[in-house]
Length: 399
Image 1 (cartoon, rainbow, N blue to C red):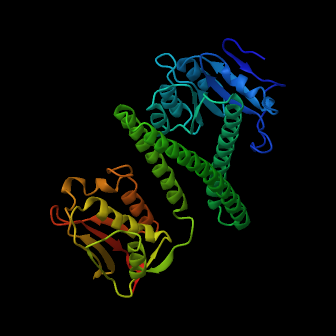
Image 2: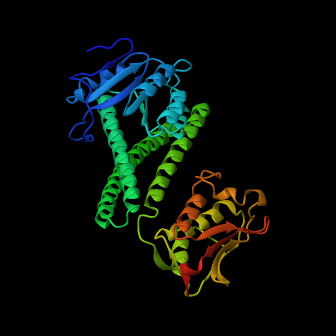
Image 3: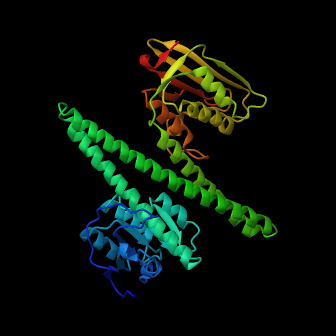
């Protein structure tokens, strides 16, 4: 089959309403795809597949044309090539988010721009695929990516619908059974999304591990060519950044999914210290029998605080974890005698993406504590050491 110009391609039958979600192992149902490229190559990759009739493709050659189609028609996925200025997938991604924020976006490109994958994923793209390689493998990977992306979007729709129904039923507390049914639907939708993101994350991390391995091998083979090795180091740094970001999504996804529990702060802090290198530093944990009612991820709070000391405190020799009462509140303090935190950034260090490492550590700390209403702030003096105060509301601590 062949495609020319702007048109809609439906290999078999006519476009029909979607009533099922796709399963990569069982075959997709009809998926409506908006494809931007110089030529309608997408159909060529998909037509050899046994379930090619499940993909309805609308083809266009510029972002302006794509945006007009988005305003007037409904699609499940956007798949785009990137050849600026006339075919700018990054611009289409940005503008498409304004029209349909939840519409999945896949880069399918042969661009050699080394910054494009990072720009695409940071811009909100769901996947980045290259056209290069064995055609059969590319076709199979493309199909699986489309199906999984479609399934994720359908699950998200189910979740939104479940939340809407739950809100509606809460307005009428007398209908207890209806609320229970809505909660069960929401639970199932959450379970489905969690499983899907776990599989996707696992697949990405596997590919990142392969990529890092090959980069290390190339670095060894090309170590006598400084210009090339410098480029490889940049690529490896960007790849490891992606790995760190994906790992963060796993931690953030687990947040709040389990019931809070009473936890002994001394035990939690000492356990976190076991995984940190504190050679030459005096570490004291003086919290007595204090227990805190917090999310089960409380250990990551102390792991990240200690890791922050190791990475940013400079030449520190002391770390102290202590507890005091202040009215009905309890205050756990984690402090060191390192370089401290400048006044200008005391609040910014808790923002997502801030910092020279992953940019997620202290952001995650605040999010974990906030599950049970606990807060944290930095109150140290620059030049004399950092001091993090964890403020415990009356109902969240006991001795």
